[in-house]
Length: 169
Image (cartoon, rainbow, N blue to C red; front, side, top):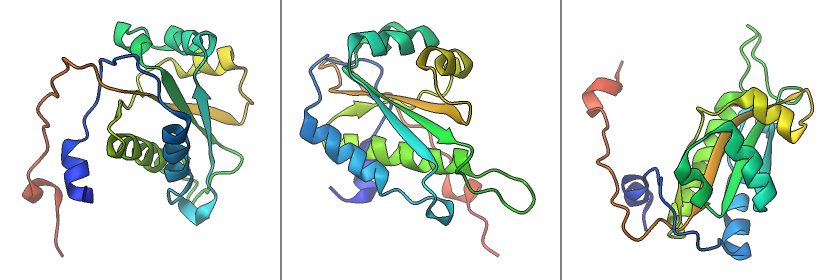
């Protein structure tokens, strides 16, 4: 599948079959994320793979949605503030790097026929506490991954027209 088609067909999955993700699929997804570009190639991220019921239940406390519990695994992406690149004006770049890695995860999953969903609206402070993360790490994105439920119908994609987002100078 070409990149444009992959981008067009990928959508946020909010209903999962519960079928497990294979180790080969997981390794492929993680390798794609590892290869994502980052500022100054610092790769200021950690990918926490949560497959156990106990770990998944911890994260479910941080984002209370019924559909989340259906996914067989979660990948929590954290930024390492002591590693991220900082511009000379003080602007930190880690969140941007995490966003790129997160999209690599979602596109790799879609390429394998798996569903995923970006979740940023979770309680990051509670997540930090429950997982006992180092002070220098901040949870940024939670991505459930799994096979989409058979009866799930993708919602219509809403994207701005090219003229609204592109400025040629």
